[in-house]
Structures are given as C-alpha cells and as structure tokens.
Length: 501
Image 1: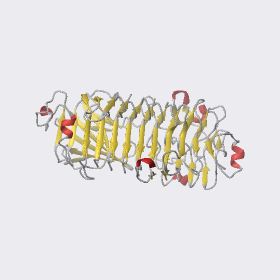
Image 2: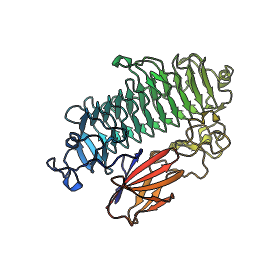
Image 3: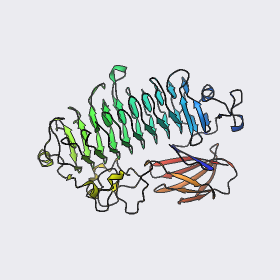
Image 4: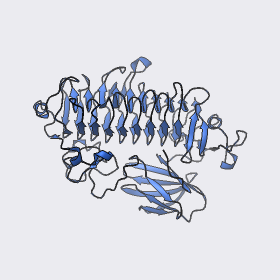
C-alpha cells in the first residue's frame, strides 16, 4: 500500500462524526513510554503502552515507523465514543507480533474499536495480520496485510463488524479476509484480496465453535478479488440471506467465483442475493457460481457477467432449481442442473425456466475495455449496457466505482455501469484515490463522485466552515495543524484527516 509522500497526509476514514474531545495519545519511533503521550513531541514509544491506557472516546495516533504489534482486551468504546487506533502516515508498519499472541494487532472482548491505516506484515507461526474476536461494532479500514502466516484479517463472534478499504495479500496458509463464528450483519466492502494461498474472502458460521453457527445478513460488495489459489473468490459456509453485489472476481485458480455451501456452518448458505458481479474464471478455475443442494432456496442471481474459461465447467452449477431465480446475466454456453459433474447448454437451461432474458457471452474484447489488462469497465458497444433488470434497484444504486445506477433506461450487467465520460486508472485498486493534495500549492484535488457537501472541522471536531463542493479545495490559508474534512457523497460520508505542516 505505497501511497505518495506528500506535505499533506490524507487518511480516508469513512465514518460518521465522532466525539473527538476525549484524550488523544501519540506514538512515535522517537518517543519514550515515560512521556505523557499527549502530543507528537511527547509521544510514547510503543503502541501497546497507549493501548494499556485507552478508554471510550480515546484515539491513538501512530506516526510513520516500524512497530511491535499490540493487544487490546476487555475495554469498550461506545457508538458515540469508539476507541480508535490510527496510523498518521503512509508507512506505519507493524512487522513483529504483540507480546501475547502471534498476531500483529489483536482485539479481544472489546466493542466499538476502530483500526485504521496500518500496514501489518510477516506475522509468523499461526499469526494473523489483524485479529478481532468477541468484539461487536468494530471497524477495520484502510489497512494493508501481507505475507502473514494464517490470514490478513480474521474475525470471530463479531456482530456488526465493518471491514472496508483494506488490501490483504499473500497469506501463507489461508485467506485474505476471514469472518467466522456466528458473526451477524458483517459488512465487507471495497477491499482488495489477491495472492492468498486459499480464499479471497471467506465466511464460515462454524457451528462447532458455539453460537447458532449461522452468519446472518452479510453484505459483501465493491471488492476486487483476484489471483487467489483456494476454494473460491468469495466462499460462504452457513450464511443466511447474504447480499453479494458489485464485486470484481477474476483469475482465481482452482476456485469457484462464488461458492454457497455447508461444511462447518449450521446450515447451507441460502437466501442469497447475488447481483451485478463480474466473474471471470480462468482455465484452471472451477465454476462461476456453485450452489450446493439447499443453497437454491430463495437465492437470486441477477445482472452478473459470468465467463468461464475452463474446458468444460461453466457459469452456474446447482442440483435443485426449485425456489431459485436467475436472469439477465451474461453467460457462457455451459450451465449445470446436476451440480459439479456435467453441463448443459444455455438453451437447455432456459428451457427449465431459468435465465430466459440472459445473453450468451460475446468475446471478452467486445464486452470489456481491455480484459488483457484486467480492465473490466464496459466497452462502448458492450452487450452488457442496458440489458440488466431493474429488480435489483432497492439494493444496487451505485456501481463498483461509485457511479449512479442505472445511467441508461435499464441497469447494465456486471460490476461496472457504463459511463462514456469515465476515465480510469487500472493500475490502482478501485477504492483508492478519493482525495489527494498538490504538495506545492496546497490544493486538494478530489475524485469523489456525486459530491454534495464538504465541511471543515478542527481536530477536536469543532465546526469551522462549509466548503463549496467542487473538484479542488483550497486550504492554503489554514495555519499549520490537524484538520478534518467531511465529504458527503450520496450514501457515503468520508471524513479525511489533513495534517498541514
């Protein structure tokens, strides 16, 4: 996660307004644990020392540097006053585990905790980059986790957890992101997972661990999942009513694109809404979407592009088509109503009453801008434009890039809505580049779509002024210090911290 070094440092904190009048602690490689920790000039040396002091409403700011990990247990924030640990630069690296476990960051029996803008690499043994367990209403955002022994981000028994804007790569044993153990209402959005030994994003109710063994009402959207080597891009074991949309899933080896099944969970994943995903399965992959018997119940598959380059496996495999709906997808001529064993043509599949309005896929070069460069934006004359169904409209109101849906008379199919004015940078993760400054002029250039309002606060949360929404913001007249900019853009709010030096 190499962000540019600038005289203004920007950290994306997509959130609501917090009470910023509690204690702020500072941690620096040049600090001492005998300091007060109450300013950058009097910072602590270790994150753990600050973690031992925090209570509801406190924030720990960690400056650029290399750190030992930390462990937080048995202390709670609140909805209005969470406990926040935040990296203040682009290279806040944890590369040694904390004193208790092998994880880089471990949060346990602690509710309303926010972990923001850390790089956590190279945890050994059975270590995870970030581990959050028995901790409700917590957030992990803007973190990068690479080359960790088990997983990038692991959670268990974490109701209402939010995992967003993270990059989880090269997990040695398992997954990029793993949500487990009866964790209801998780939101996993705008993450990038690649190079992991197993699944990109894995969810498992795990009934043997206690609880009801069911993950209810998961939201999984806007993620970029590619080049992993396990069971699926998105793996769902024991989920009830998950909603999966606007995900880009490609080049995952020996894998399904999306898998709905039961192994450790208390139930077969069912009631899924799988809308507007783009799924490209390579020749050494498996199925686009695989549904185990029972996963058909009340599951809907609409507006997806599913292209499978495997020799005989295809787009959707299911054993029982009762109580199952699939339509307005773009598909290869390979489907299965017998599970993972044989295929039938799209026409034979349609004769079963499925995908009657779906399209047989043209060449990828005619559907996408440049699939050889993994640019899966829609080409100008793509068959995906305006051929989707509006039945997804209560859930899918934006595409993976934040463009309003639909732009035409109908929804486009796949994760991207066609925008003739869109300019893309496909060398960057799709969720980055929200706001960045010009270091010489002090002008902030924004790439936020559908921007409605901008509000400027000081670091304590005190209102300073409203700023006219536009593509550049002039902050040159501000005195040096730390400020907050709140961007309000459709259904999202972005609070971006500005350090002016």
